Image 1 (cartoon, rainbow, N blue to C red):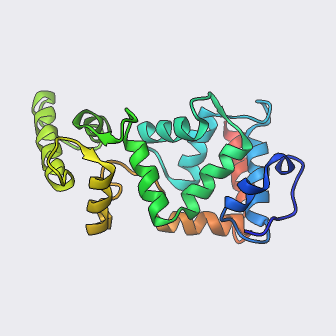
Image 2: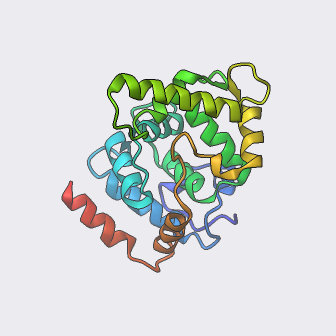
Image 3: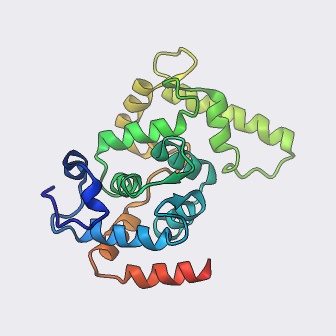
Length: 217
């Protein structure tokens, strides 16, 4: 994107980073996001805490899976306890404008808790256990979930080696794109993306919504 007029905080960024963002060419989106970031960080030295990041994603993007949001925070923050403005902008750019290939790579990284390049049964159990509504006793529920994961492995594990590699995952998603987030929602739904883009471009008052949110904290 052409480089917009920069605020004081944004002037600290290198041009390569700014050029990698896919926000609108006018700079409205990146400037509004900077303003939102500053409002969220008023009490924490321009660093976004895990709590505010989690609530922000829930409020605007309807992303409420605590395990996945925690993984998002860890990956984007590179293990730190807070996010910088640069990391915040990167995360929103990813949620709104990631290409198909970028989505697949990032979602797989979220699911790959062990960071070994493969999805293990234990990792899928962690993501799916809380979402599977089972009326039976806990023991029966765990057994049914394991059976469900076995079915998923039959679908995803293309080379039958007992793990789901990135190639396995990518091939399966190319065959059926609805399976891309079947282990848990990482990216917002399409209508949420459109809503947030409208807010950032001034079609809906995002600042008033965030001020209300901050006053409730």
